[in-house]
Every structure is written in structure tokens, then in C-alpha cells.
Length: 367
Image 1 (cartoon, one colour):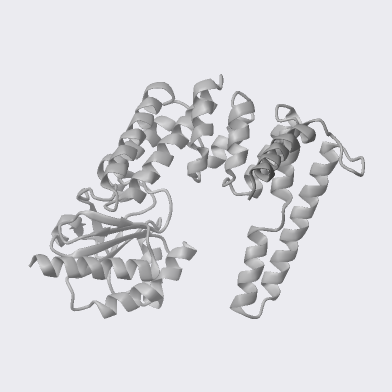
Image 2 (cartoon, one colour):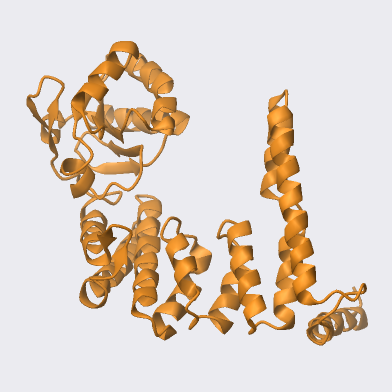
């Protein structure tokens, strides 16, 4: 491309946002609030149609297309962001950014940049920080740090600090053995935020718990339960009420499946787990399902009608490994090598089976 053409393009790219900033109305004379309302309506209509298409789909291909349409119903989000950029500091823009956050399931980096630059001190950051406590996208880090540094509300600062700790803890797990330096750095960062929570925001409530208690669990997990760490011993009871413990399985590749009979995704794993256990029955491998059902009878009754031919422990809803290992969701999966070191977390299906077979091959080589 010729030099003058590139210069003209660069000039247009600079000029367009400036022109947009002076334009509160579209070609139909609609103001920003009306345009936002129309874009929201279009987005919601497209998603409803996608749901209907998914329900009517007769093939996997049709289902995939409908799901893709649901995930990406149109260009409404970028158009709303352009409306925000026209007047990024007003209350309407903050409402629009909150909508973008929800519509994009917390994954839009531009929205975080605009929130950080113009709204970090707002009391409305509370809802966003609370929603981020359920998911921890990397794009949110700069925004969360700005909220922690600048928001005057102690509760909001506490939520931002907790989100930053969880984000770093997630990164420590993802690094794992593939990138030990990155994992170590992320673990140190998570510890820093958890320690600040204990110091400054321990009494802040998050649901029924306070951030101080959550930070204790987070600190234990990041110090003891990240990939590459040797798993702490676990004590529980089997279906006969006898004491069992993890350390007795040393020398075997172990999958710990912390689950509950009422958990749909947990039940969905059972057919594959059953096939995997049968396939590996002559190998030094053990699958241990640890039930968080409130009553042991719920588990034993379930096992009468569902074939699950492997080791079962009953923990209950509270205490034990659920509390000590900071379990936040079901199923929670840990894969341990023959030395008891955590090598994988939160994997299922073929990925789980491949991981087990890889660790079995490693154990055979060591022998």
C-alpha cells in the first residue's frame, strides 16, 4: 500500500471517534438512550430466536449453529460500546457498560477498559465485582486493580481484592507443570491478595460467608493444592463407615472425584468413568468418588440403581475435604500421579482418560 494511502487511513481512524463524540443522535434522530433500548431489544430477540432454533434442531450441526447464534447474536455489543465512547462518563454509559458485561458474559476487554478509566469509583461496581466472584477472566485484572486502588467503599474494595486473588489462583492452576515459573509467580500473587483480604477486608460478607474465611481456604488451596504440589492427606469414611485415607493409595495413579448425586454434570461423567475403570482394571489406578450428599443413604440408594464399580467415600455437605480443600463446585477433579503429586485438575472425559494413561506410562517407566 502506498504511503499516502496509509496516512489517509490513519487520519480517518483518528477522526472517526472524534466525529462520533459530537454526535448524540443517529440518522433517525434517536438519542443514545433510545438507540441503546433498540439494540438491547434486537439482542434479546436474536437470543430468543436462537433458543427456539436450538429446541427445534434435528441434527447436531443445527444445534451447533443455533448455539453459535446464541453466543453471537449480532453486532449489538460493539454498537453499544460506540454509544458509550460518545460520552463515557455519564450514568447512561455506566448502565450500558453493565449491560455489555452481562451480554458478553464478562469477556469483553473494551468494557473493562472503559469501566476502569471512567467508573472505578462508582458504587455500582459492587454488582460487577460480585458477578466476577463466579468467574475470573484475565481481561478484568486492570479494572479490578483500579477498583481496589480507588473505590472508596470498603466492601467493594474487598470484593475486588478477592476477585484478584481468585484470578491469580486460577492462573496458577492453569500454568501447572507446563509453565512452572508462571505458576509460581501467579501463586505468589494470589497469596498477596489473600493476605491483604485477611488484613483489611476479613469481615466483609460474601453471601453467608465472610471474605476472611474464604481467604483462609484460598490460601490453603494455593499453597497446597495447585498443580505440581504433593496432595495433603485426606481422611474420610467408606460406605461401611470405616476410616479411609488418601496416603494408603501411594504407588497408584489416583483420580479424586468430589461430587454429589444431585449434580447433573457429575452424573453425566458416570458412563465414561465406568468405561475408563473397566479399561484400566489391571493397572495401578484407582478412582475415588467422594460424595458431598447430606445423607449417606442418598448415596447408597443411588449406587443400588447405578453401576459405579470403584471406590466410594462419603464426606457430607460440610467439613472434611469439602471444607479443607476449599471445594467451590461439583464435580471437583484432582488427578494424582503415583507419588501423590497433583498433576491435573478439573478435567473430564477423554482429557481425563488421556491424563491417567500418561501418568500410568510415567509410573511404568520409573519402575
